[in-house]
Length: 145
Image 1 (spheres, rainbow, N blue to C red):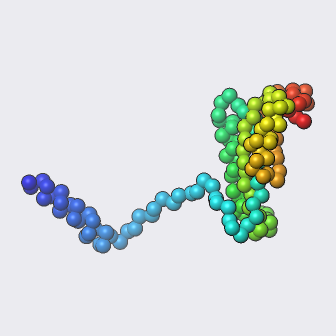
Image 2 (cartoon, helix red, strand yellow):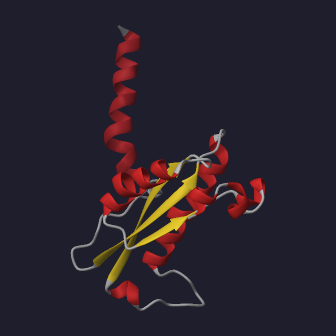
Image 3 (cartoon, rainbow, N blue to C red):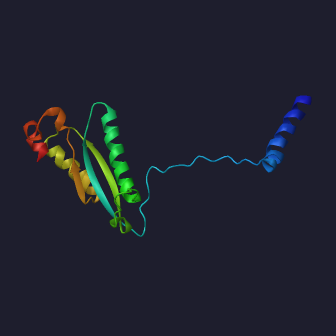
């Protein structure tokens, strides 16, 4: 019974007396949001990006991170050298889709219509890994077009 009384006393000290007498405050960890909800006052501009699908996820993760960080930085208008005035009225959103690098024309159209254009995008970026497979036009003409 003696150990229970000691534990109860320590809990009492920890909850009532120590916070009152403490002159130090501990900083809480701030949570950085991964995505920002669309603002009601701003017009949304959607950007569609078709990325090459890799066997390993590391290149894909790096490209996804770079694109989402770029849109966030433009929306926050944090560049010291350039201040964008269009961010007062518009907000960018990126929609990223992965596609096989040797996709047939029918697959390319399916991805465009079902996944990219369904998001009502204003701009489509089609990225390839042409540095790995030579020229885009020499690799797969249908996919490049």
